[in-house]
Figure 1 (cartoon, rainbow, N blue to C red):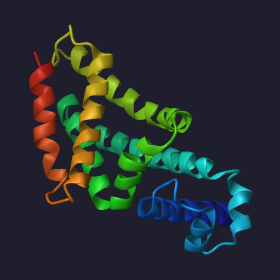
Figure 2 (cartoon, rainbow, N blue to C red):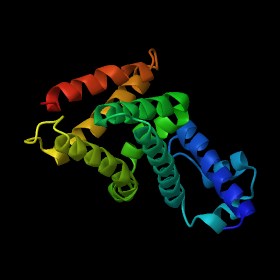
Figure 3 (cartoon, one colour):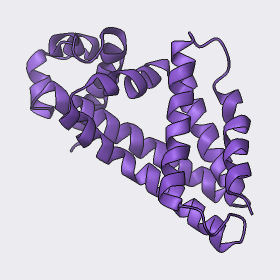
Length: 194
């Protein structure tokens, strides 16, 4: 895509995030996304065949950005434990810093149909894989129990972070989400460390 097309694509996704967070995915109209993005409704269909494709592209962009931030955070970490801490902190900080993002990823996705959730779930795989690689590295370095079920623990960690964000939203965001990092990671490190 040319630079101008990329900008238009990004503006549509940014508008969609706002509209989905405000109205819910099912009650959001493509015309509202177009108005919010400042484009004609027909322009949306130059980029996306249907509203579901907008949600999928939105998740692909979100996950791609998050994994890039995680990768930088991991490279700056001294060891695997610190890397897991950074992933959790980035996850919570990103959601806390963008409530629309938190609402769409935590609430709207789970109200979508099964096929859409499955397709969007594919975008989460690189994130889960990154956690798995860190757990395996921790086993190699003798930091984590070798008997640990890595595939289960990676899902438990991801699921725990997911639930913490959902609870934070449901509570009305009455406390700092980023401040939950220590408790989350300490819980897991106590369970998996040698």
